[in-house]
Length: 410
Image (cartoon, rainbow, N blue to C red):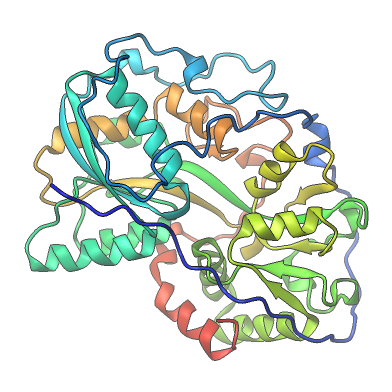
């Protein structure tokens, strides 16, 4: 099978808006997570960009000189001070799982595709009888492709790995996924799985802020507090073409309704916000002092600090609102897979001790298996205060895109 390998979503244009009148900010106490982590030095993300983002299609035979060697946790764990002192992860080690034998076709979603590809290649290097093909595009594009292929009869993909639950649910809602057995999904909390897909890495929305210009207590406790705060006039950043931002706005629509969400978007535009093509660049701009703060997934600030240990950036987590959404990357088995059993075994490998340690220490994502700890300094998922919204509701992306266009955000 031949499958195309493409990049992720296209960048947007820079834009800024005007000011609006200030309003009072609620007070509370916060600690600085990245300082608590002792994040300094280099190498935390060693190898995280990896191969596979070079625009080529990959066909592997699993015999790249290392096939059959034992897995070592050091092959999966990142390096640097953020992961120093970590013990062995809990959960189920790969050695306790059935072997991967056969060929799988993967649809890999968007921005983290290179990381997923690293992990798949590690499995192919270990298992001499396992090989794979892959296609790399944005999660939303692949979700739509699977739905169209399913309606036409069948999809060439066996496994869909997406960067957000909304894309997974789009495919599941169309009846284009196979159900997953409890033996595969049980290690993951119910909030991060369904019968048709399972979360493999968590991503919390957060507020990256410049620590030279703000204290943690000066960051609003909810995203609804930003529009009325003149402190942030012309000093915020976001990436509205980014899938993570779409999920954030979709969550706001589900929590507060379209009218209130429209008002918030319009008021942020009035306050003054700069658009970036992705949230890593938002976080870099915060660290550079170009912005006071931004809206981004939690791990981008950690990646900035990894590359620039002295960068004045930290993250704050809001409370109970869309800005506190905990989304997941996840995997689903595409209906009609030629080897459903192998696909199930592969998904189980994504939840192994080694794979979860990979996600935690190379991507700074939250492990979805409770026995694997998050990177040092971050609160656990249980300590966060996410909104009361089901991840299955995040599939309503088209309504969000329409709203973003109507308000001029897109």
